[in-house]
Image (cartoon, rainbow, N blue to C red; front, top):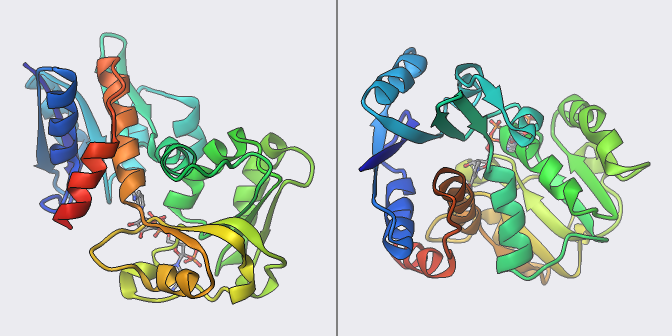
Length: 272
Ligand code: NDP
């Protein structure tokens, strides 16, 4: 039976084994998928040990997504653009590093929420690892505008420098929260502010009528950002759909079969 796992530290909270078990059952694939606690100073060794045990692939979560770039012997374009790896594929040609987080986010917005990105004004809050991973997949959908707002403006400016040419003239720009201008159709909270129940300091005017507000964090209760967005008429999505969709992308990379996600997302939501 082919073996897969998710590496992290901590890892007990990870929902990935449940998601992949559901995908395997649904598609009739025989595989096992486990949680692996990698030591903070021993990620590369943990990966090699898993390969030696016959592992075929792995997901990578906090805090190893940057280190996984170095462990990979080849990177996909989207992993290179993200500067981070969340999916490893152990092949005869070596260890391939991929990043499915951005594709997961975009699939959740476009397919699950039914909101096209093409031609829309998109506001991305945050410029950390999660934000960086979604810029290329968003630009591939040709938004009218992508504004990256961050507390530390220089970090957002560095992202613009990296991706400006891909977006087309004037499409991607950076600013601080106080400088955000106008209203947006899609507002994505990729900051970690929700983890400490804080609200990124955005004005209520950023939500265009009928806007979609998405927080990458998920939980039983809406985050403070989603509560704020609801007060201003936005349609809401948390990060659970992104989590399931990034797993589906990894599963299809490993197994060559695209699993259906709606029922898995519904079950996870009921378990929150
Ligand atoms: P990082 O630590 O790399 O980046 C944190 C970002 O949040 C930075 O832009 C930082 O700004 C900003 N920030 C932190 N605190 C505040 C605050 N109080 N007000 C405004 N901005 C703030 O984290 P990640 O990018 O890895 O993760 C961000 C979030 O995305 C987390 O909540 C994580 O759980 C979630 N996530 C969800 C996934 C999913 O599948 N649903 C996948 C990956 C991530 P500055 O640069 O100024 O410090």
